Length: 332
Image (cartoon, rainbow, N blue to C red; front, top):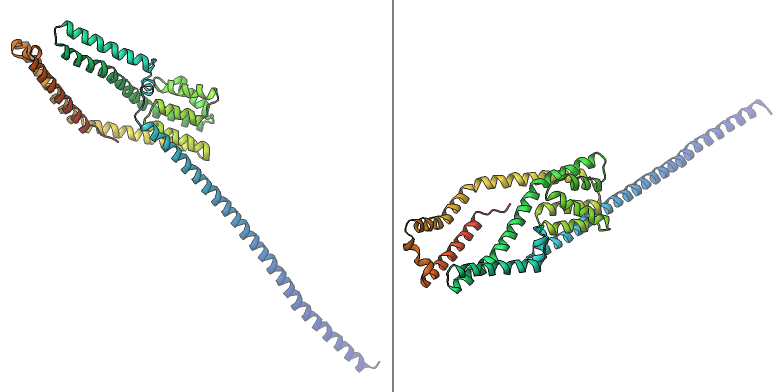
């Protein structure tokens, strides 16, 4: 081969290598670009899919939890509406913590009425006056005493209930289980908070669920504070959550209600004093007249028409006192 031929072959080989390099560069870059694009698209797709699955899972869990909370609240509202109906005599005796049944209470009512009728007949009053007063005393006095006992237990329970919830909050923050906190309240708290929580512990020992035990507690102590406590624990057991924070908020709400109640009592004290003076004034005047001139007022007790007037006056006085009581009673 001559020198010109070798030069041409070298040039051709160089051109071929250059073309192959250019082609490999473009084709390789295209393939790698496609590969990188494909990997990126798969990564983005998997990321979107993972995010979507996570979002769907979070959304489904949130919706499920919200649905459980709504169902729990509806169920508790139905139970609260059932309790709001006029309680039976047996339920009222249980709320007053009287260890008697309804039959024994009726026997006591009849006995008080019979004794009152006999006492007024012995004092020389007419039979219809004795029967009327005996019926009023026998039917009204035991029930008034029952209602007074229930209201007194409710006030005592409300006064100490916020402290009991604080015990649960501190115990849960310290790592104690809820049952141990309830046991501490049952043994350390006084009447009537301690016995109520003691009944919860005893009920749970025989297999009663906490929700049912709280419902029975609300039946024995039908106040809004116990209803709030029942709602918080029931929702926390079904849906989870920070129990100490929820009960801490509940304790703050109960203390705010207590302060509001004290403020209402202070603002309405003048009206209550006025109602007490107006209600007691006729009785005080009648007593003073009877002490100074007994013959002047004796006709109300000895004459039949005087007895009728006395009965009418007593009825009107009772209506007036009832109206004044409603006017000075505030719901909060």
